[in-house]
Image (cartoon, rainbow, N blue to C red):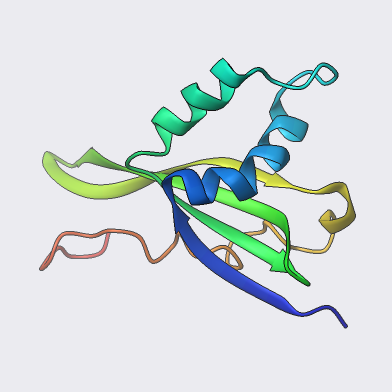
Length: 116
């Protein structure tokens, strides 16, 4: 049974683990993405947080969330926009990226806000 752990990472540290998964999932390869593509993705990671699932020390799935405000019934509420959900082919069809395993659901909610 593989050793499994989930880590919440930020910035360049997150990008080092998730960039191979994101490029495989969202870019045409080959060729591999350029340095400019990596730098652009890093600019998105400045305020984002990545949840990365590791199996035996290797990143096999990820999801990224960025803080945002959403207008809900006339009130501005803090929330997260989830993006960059990807899984290595060896981790697919095992529920790795299903709602629940990657912890964005405990996102940001304004103190005192009532649930919808």
